[in-house]
Length: 141
Length: 191
Image (cartoon, rainbow over all chains, first blue to last red; front, top):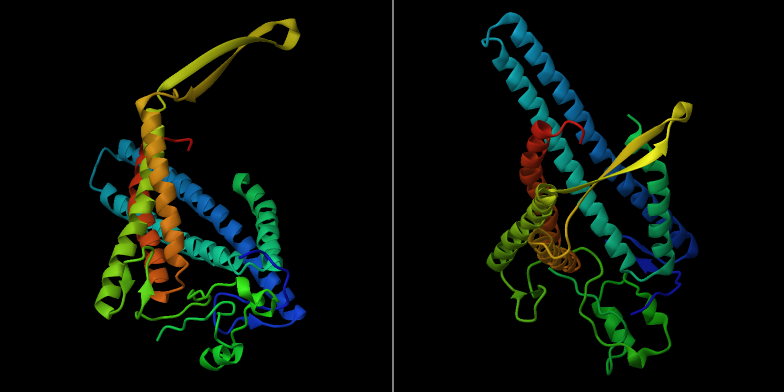
């Protein structure tokens, strides 16, 4: 099996079969956007983790300040449970993002496996464009 | 029911026969190629399907034929994907713990007003023949092999197995990265 330039391609699902240059061009565009989304998800996961850690450290330091001021431990249990719940929800959201990242990564691998050179260019270009757009957002905060 | 598409042209069977038994929407690029004698008959599906009959999994003796075997394969693939995520997190933690060799080197740099300042560079690293690095290498090989296995499993295009890979990865990330994130939160402030 080898890479070929072709006007026909079947990608991933039974209904996604194209036989014309316009169809292939549209497929390449969809794959390109998928690759951009993949890079965006990678950056999004890192930013979500960063946001969660900073908000978590802020809330725990506030809790410590309140404790030293009031000299009582009866008020910290709702704070602790609220922080834990927030952390749990944030981590659950990150796990969903991780599943989306794994699935899109495998879809891109299977798209390249179609051995259609136009699709391969779409994947590579989309990864490049996605990296270019998304990674500056990583160090933004 | 699983749909298997014949890729390329097989020897001894006319292409008309092929088209009548397969889904009419399937076209493969190489079927238009002129060198038909060099193509082998491949039973590899190229689109997603849900089925559990005659599913080959990674090794030649491993064929799934019943729903019970598919359920077992689902659980096994789920656990493999979970193990892969755990291995990634474990390697990260091991790397962080073993970076104990810290090297400082100071060098003079010119400062303002003509004074000389000493700038100190800190490098952390591992020695090449140390046990932590060898362990990291062995774990890296295992990680590479498992990642290729997961890719090949996803390449069967079987819907149940692909869902098992994705769900296992998600559950593994949820369980192992949760612990790692809590540890990171407590011990490190500038992550």
